[in-house]
Length: 265
Image (cartoon, rainbow, N blue to C red; front, side):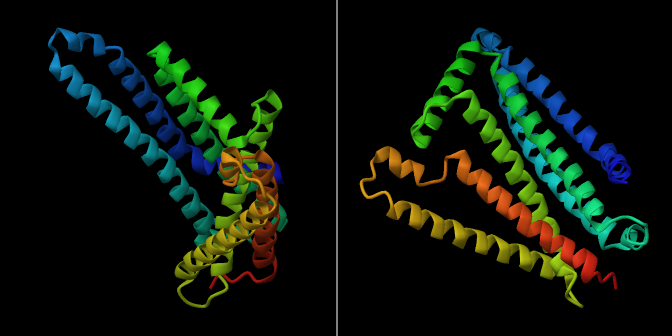
């Protein structure tokens, strides 16, 4: 049943989100083409310089528009299909609540992950227009990461960093689903209460992070310059642990409201 729900959810989202990602691909190709025309500007083609600036600006704005638009659409999709008019049909199906939550969270996180991969791949592809700039950027990025983490970057570190990112992505999706679900407990202004729950969850997370950093800093009696940067949570272990804890907490809250306190009025 989980597979059928995921298939249905994918069909309901790809018609809008796939073209949005294709727009990003087209803008990347156009921006890459413009960066290769810079050589003509030395011959007095000032219009080429102007067009390059405009294309790059449009390219950057399109990346933000696609990512933010995807997030807004997925939030809207979760609300309308779970607690809106479509929710009446969804919750009458002989489907386990866990399957409903997992299907929506997995598809939403998958689209956000696709967006992230597309954006990173787009930037890397764009920098291949100037090979020297690409390698300089990559070397500089690796040096900064090594400086802030205080450890050498290895394949294992990169893999675990990606794993930690995936868990943090699931945590963000589940936080939104939990806040929307908690907002349904209110008899009036459910959307406003959902937003209030989100702000409250954000504040609680900030407080917990602050307490963690204070405890961590207290153990660094002889903090050096590198240790000071590591204070800002650059290690994958902390990100992974926080992501797992957040996933469990927000998943339980979503499941509890959806299975025990469902209110579609």
